[in-house]
Image (cartoon, rainbow, N blue to C red; front, side, top):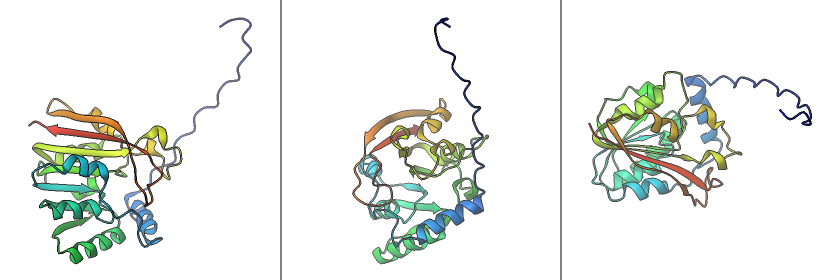
Amino acid sequence: MDSNTPHQPARPAPQPAPPLPEPAGVEEEWDQRYAASEALWSGQPNGALVSEAAALAPGRVLDVGCGEGADALWLAARGWDVTALDVSSVALERAARQAEMQRLQIAWVHSGLVEAQLPAASFDLVSAQYPALLRTADHAAEQALLQAVAPGGLLLVVHHAVASDAGHSHDLDQYVLPADIAAALDGDWRIEVHETRPRHVASGAGAHHNEDVVLRARRLR
């Protein structure tokens, strides 16, 4: 250090992150959030899903964190065999009503991703649009996503770009992001897309976010 450099006070030690909520607490949190409004999201399918899946041949798809069901409904209307899961019973009830109105068949699963214990390697597409998947030391959420994809199938994960999300209602450091999933991929996978894109959403709780990170990976075997 240069002798003329003024003494800098020591930085305070970083404080530990608050404990992550238990699964039951997560369900209650999301139920309350949905119950506070007639519609939490825009009601339109997510743009990245439409962009990436519009040209795909329909097969079996898992919609992770389906919320009020806009993505699941869009997929089912295009011939996909849809399994849609969410921790919130309030969201699933809304989604199921919309499916009934549109005469669409969707398998609704009231569960978190890890707790659902879905059959392994059984989905041609696993879509996780802005998932609220808690980070854990054993990377359980990342592995659950990867294990659900059938050989030859696609994993599509989209999340808000961290750099533009200082005002996010959740601490994104506590949640699984596309970079975490990309880091979990091994030689059985090929990353086809991993990029930041502009996002334009006019309404709904996430409308203020203007950039997304999109990860699309194919399971080779």
